Length: 273
Length: 90
Ligand SMILES: Nc1ncnc2c1ncn2[C@@H]1O[C@H](COP(=O)(O)OP(=O)(O)OP(=O)(O)O)[C@@H](O)[C@H]1O
Ligand SMILES: [Mg+2]
Image (cartoon, rainbow over all chains, first blue to last red; front, side, top):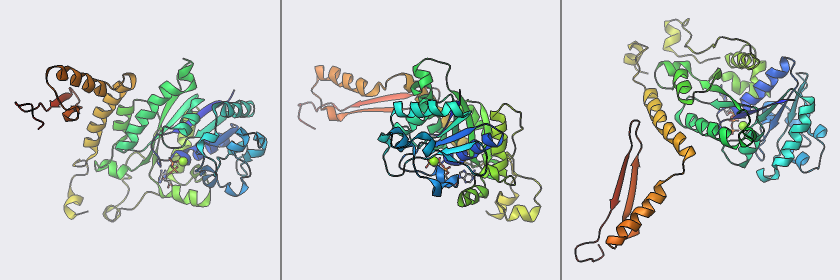
């Protein structure tokens, strides 16, 4: 049986798609057969971040509506063996997805894959609920910012009440915090919530902290999941997070401002790579 | 960034992150409670108006319920405008 992982946040634009792409790629790089599903029907973007936008023929809605077979809609990644992408529809609306339809897809994917990563749309409406309903584990993507933290808490409540596991009174969905766009310099200046604050408020186990990094934009420009940029701090931080997800111990990095910069470096700032 | 800022001790936090944390702790603790309970305010307001209306004729539109959520306690303020002595509409 595959593990179903939802990448969710409530709030929009915090890094769900970036994280879904990175984590799915990281799992596949470690030999786990992984499929990543875009649940953002109407606002397809995972295909771009994964760099497969030109190969999309069918999408999840076509499969749910019986217009295509699942195997026809799955796109095999050309860089990492064992990694597939199931794109969202660009034209249909969210109501095109049904619980039964999604369940059938997840059951079929479970035969072949170890991990099914679900990239949730923003909000707590139907699309988001659909993406988290079948989850065994949830990666809650949060930015160190008041509205994002509050929305994360809200989505934790939804996971605890509206998921299949909650409805069937099974063992609850396993929750992980992924704090992204963390700017150590601003935290040090007291301008941004620090890791400890967010952990204290949300009180769920920490999977990783991804620093604010210019490499994320570069990666999305090129259509390469940022985890493949092994030089970048964001890529390394995602890689650590995947290792932790698989049960390995990894110290948390990039939490503090690098001290090695000289006076000039500090005077003129200098951004994280 | 001014020169003064630069020479200020780095650890000093005159930033707004601490305020953010305090505000979040208060609002989230309240939201967690209301997740399990229904929001009672609309009903409370309705029933209050009914009780008061038994004694004086009031304009339901002139009833205000204000809640200020705090960390240790919250304050509920109910403001009901009563008609003037002659019972004229105010
Ligand atoms: N660690 C980071 N450093 C810098 N920029 C980042 C980082 N993570 C994400 N971003 C940027 O933030 C923006 C939103 O990211 P992304 O699309 O992954 O968010 P999302 O949660 O999927 O959004 P939506 O809710 O719209 O689906 C993108 O422009 C992305 O490049
Ligand atoms: Mg997205």
